[in-house]
Length: 495
Ligand code: G6P
Image 1 (cartoon, rainbow, N blue to C red):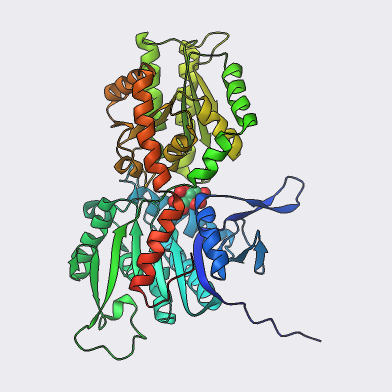
Image 2 (image 1 turned 180 degrees about the vertical axis):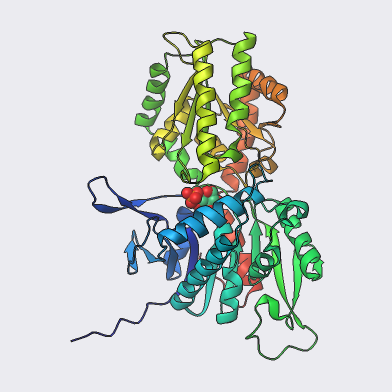
C-alpha cells in the first residue's frame, strides 16, 4: 500500500537561515553524522523556539541531501536541499563572491554574473516555499542574513498573514557602492517585504533607508519607511482593500547590535580545567612574556595581512623580540572554493613564513599560525592565555570574537585592540580603537597594549565587560522580536 505523505507539521515561530544550526558531516570513511554548530544565534533563540512551537529552516551544509524534518536537541529542523550547482552559483557565487565583497566595501572585487543571480532567485524561492509550508496561520517568521534577502517579499506575496522579520548580520554598504549591483532594486524590494529589517549599526540602517529613497522614492522618517500598498513591486498582491487614510504599510529599519551568550563564556572561563589549559598553552609557546591573539575566519575582510605587517615591522624595528612576544593566529578555513579565499590563504601563509624565517629563533617562532577551527573550550583557553586580543577587521558587521574575549576575562585583565570598522566598536568604546589601514597607528596601539599598566587594563576591561553582559544575545533577540511583534500583527511571543 502506498501511504499518503504526512501533512507537514506547522509552527508559530519559524527561523530561516542559509546554514542550519546543525551541520551534516561526512566522515572520511563515508559515514554521515550531525555536528552541532552552536552559534550564539541558536543559544539565543532556543528558549524562544521551545516556548513558541518553533522550527528552523535551512541548509545542512552538503550537496544534494533530501532530508525529512527532524528534531535536534529539542529544536525542529526543516532541511532545504541545495544541489552542487546551487552551491556553486547561489552560495559560493552570488552570496560569497558578489554580495559579500560588495557589502564589505569592495575589499575584494565583486563578480557580477547573471546566472548566479538567477540561481539566487531560485534558491530564495525554495526557502520561501519551505517557510510558507511549515508556518501556521499568523506565524512569526525571522529570516537571517544576506543569503536570503528576497525571502521576505516572496513570503509576503504568498502569506500576507505572516509577521516577517529580517536581520542582516553583515554591513549594509553606502549607496555609492551598493548602486553597483545590477539587481539593486530587486534586493531592496525583497527586503521591504519584511515588517522589521534589523541591522548591526545605525550607519547600516541609514545606508539602507537612503537606498530605499534613491531607488524607490518611498518616504522615510527616522527608522520608519512608508511602503505604498498600491505598489505592486513590494509584494502587496494579497493585501485586500486599502484602508482609508493609511494607504501604506510601515516597515521599520533599525539597528539591533547582535551579541553573544556572555554567561556561557564566563562559565567556561571559570572552569579549572580551562584555566589549566590556558597555563599549558603559555608553556607550550615557551612562556613568552606576552601573548597576542588573533582569531578569525580566513577572510579578506578581517585585515589579517595588516596585522601581520604591523607585527613584522615591530620585530624588524627591534621594538620586541621573538622570545618576548608571540602572536597566535587562528585562521579557520572558510569558503575554500572561492578564488579570493584561496589567494588570501597563499598571501597570509607567505607572510607568516617570512616573519618566522626572518625573526624566529630555533626555540621561538614569533607567529604561531593555525589553519583550523578549534572547539569552544580551546578558544576560551586561548582567550585566557592572551594578554592582547587583536581585531583588525577592514569591515565587519559586528565581530563577536571581540565580545567573546571580553566575556571570558573574569580577571578584568587583558587588552582589546579593536578596529573602528567592526560594528563592535560602536559599543566597545574602551577598547584601543584602531584604523587597521594605518600601520604606524596599529604598531603604536600594539606597543601601548603590551605596556599598559594593570590599573588601566582593569578600568578598561571592567567597562567593556559591563557593556557585553548588559547587552547579551538574549537581550538582542528579545529587543528585535518585541519591535517585530509590535509592528506586525502577531501576538507577542512567549519569552
Ligand atoms: C558570517 C555570515 C554568516 C555565515 C558565517 C560563516 O558570519 O554573516 O551568515 O554563516 O559568516 O560563513 P559560511 O559561508 O561558512 O556560512
